[in-house]
Length: 418
Ligand code: GLV
Ligand code: MN
Ligand code: MN
Image (cartoon, rainbow, N blue to C red; front, side, top):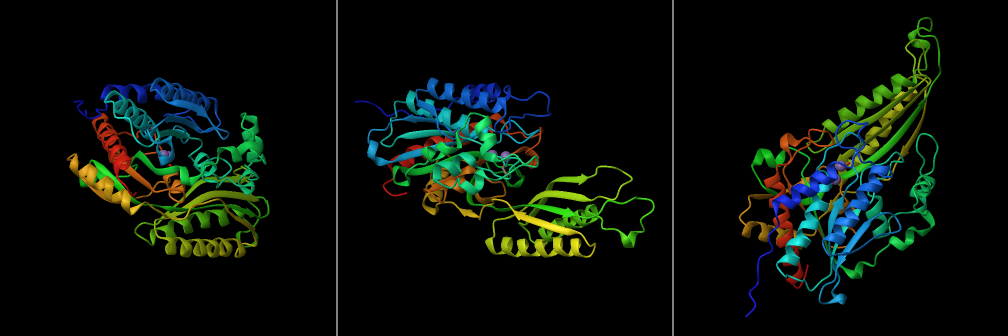
């Protein structure tokens, strides 16, 4: 009689894949930089394509740049189990964010194939295109395209040089007119599972090995443009100025104050531009680009209103005009309670210390959750550092995550209702 072997993910292969991917970076920047649409991003996604094929998957790059590999199951009508993450990074980022989920998905496939554990469902690995927010204020581009959430409005977004996102995609060989082809039918999908690093300090503090994500934070991103008057910095009395820089600075601090009012509130201004950029000229034009986050929908709504009010007051008291724009954001996204229970059962059975938690970082899983049952597994991050070169997760912790992912895939394959 044929014996059923357990799939065994191998640490060496996972480490080697992470190492290889970490070499495809822009060396002119600190850390590990592979921003979407850069030549390193294209090279990284082609690396993913080759690794998928090496792992025995039927793989291609779709109309928006997602790399998709499929291992056909016994029942093509049963719907696919999807797993994966992203290989693009923030500028000066780390070598684990997103990469762990893609490399973990590849290793899950290899381990299952070696154990001769063909699934009933198709198993699909995806390296989602452009997960990190880009200069156009848009994130999770690949998962938005798959779920039908990439609109003409998104394509019309402009960066600070006035370039349209549609034109930036076309320049990188992605035809914006063909994006509808990337869309999937949700009835052909059974579940999405994403393995990722935590990117925060909670798991390390609790001593947990696997984090089970209950909710992914909501994000409200904005761009605010203050327009004042340029004047001589030494001669124009303070009460006669229309200083756009001071209005912007007051708004930066308002973001910090508002976000600090709630335990899970987060507020960040990641970019400030003053024009003219000169020490002896009162600023005429100031642009800030920032975000508010929280897993609590009502508080996020309150924070949006409070921020608009604060920015308006900062501008009005200085005779400065304000042009405020909300960029595409996301509502808080709950993960599937059924999948969460399955994950908890699998991870507990494997003997890993685990806990439920919310994610303060955005993920493709937040987009996928509106489309199909979705769950996320976290592994710990050293000192909670992420989006910086110091981002680190121990190899043994990554492997525990890959093990948990592999076993969860087999359980979802055989569980009647997800
Ligand atoms: C993605 O990493 C995000 O949380 O912005
Ligand atoms: Mn990230
Ligand atoms: Mn990520």
